[in-house]
Amino acid sequence: MPLTILCISGYEKGHDFMRECKEKGCRVLLLTSKSLEDASWPKESIDEIFYIADKNKEWEIKEVIYGISYVARKEKIDRIVALDDYDVEKAAALREHLRVPGMGDTTTRYFRDKLAMRIRAKETGIPVPEFLHVLNYDAINKFARSVTFPYIIKPRLLAGAHGLKKVNNTEELWNRINELGDEKSFFLMERFIPGNIYHVDSIVYENEIRFALASKYGKPPFEVAHLGKVFTSRTVKRGSATEQRLLELNEKVLKAMGLVRGVSHTEFIEADEVRQDSVQPRRDGKFYFLETSARVGGAHLSNLVEAASGINLWREWAKIEILRGEGEYLYPEVKNDYAGIILSLAKQESPDLSAYNDDEIVWRLKKKNHAGLIVKSESYKRVEELIESYTKRFYKDFFATQPMKERPGD
Ligand SMILES: Nc1ncnc2c1ncn2[C@@H]1O[C@H](COP(=O)(O)OP(=O)(O)O)[C@@H](O)[C@H]1O
Ligand SMILES: [Mg+2]
Image (cartoon, rainbow, N blue to C red):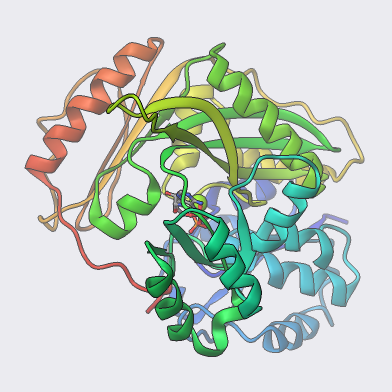
């Protein structure tokens, strides 16, 4: 009997995951939003697609349970996999309900709920910004008296920098908290730590990290999303102290949260230190845990990882889900190249990138009103140079900005 894998995705993603499952002989089912009926799903790799009505990408969990329980009258579902961050809880709830093995509600919390991951990290000695649940007024006032502003107030369960607000003083803090109404308890607040933001993308099999690659965002994602900036990221120099520290912390985080197998996109902040005796900020080398997830990173970062390492995270993840600890996991040889990605909203509907023709370009984004490239080289310096010069050119040639929405799908 072939394995039947149910993929859940409220966004169009994970094509290679489904392709790999099909190539490995699985029966592939996909549950997605009605609004994605016309998306370019890899239909040749999917046996059946089920649609669910969605309102702003939100599905009623009860409806998902009814729907999939109905499907399960005829299908024996062996695996349930969430391809997007927002589907992780739904997949866990379904697994719990149908008693399908895999990550359940408790572990899922650590990979979705930013408050749960902060508390767990702190308990295990991983550095985190001072934080507090937006709940008890006395506790909030006490926090405001002892922790230096600015703070960031963030939703526990959203992604993509949605719903984040930076506040600079007590008045702004309370204005935002009051604005949140009954949603308050779904938020946390924490000290805003200016610095560089990094991401580590990993593959975990049977509690062991089998692959991890560290990359550094150009501008912090908060600035990119809220102020409108060109988005970039690139591989961290291999063998550097920064890489070592990031990989160490990443391992601590994934062990603390209890990821048994799968993929993870985890982020860290490298704090700037402003010294009293100097105008120039200096790095104090201190890294803080920002957030983790049990999924492939968004913003085409899987393509960045593949360009640098030859590892396709979607395909490797599919192999791992199929194996589920019942066999040895062998992954392809890892290449040690460097890669950089640049993405921007474009003022033109079909931006012309023909003037970008360096040999290092290995990927081009095909999306209306967007411009994007990935470069790859054996040389760290060359990638740095290209990303820097392309960033300047992108601002001139394509850059456009639009106001950030509070929630995805608004
Ligand atoms: N405590 C913090 N200090 C500094 N910047 C932060 C902090 N928390 C969030 N940010 C900024 O906001 C962005 C999004 O926050 P994050 O917690 O990663 O949520 P999301 O799931 O939306 O990516 C980060 O990449 C970073 O730029
Ligand atoms: Mg983030």
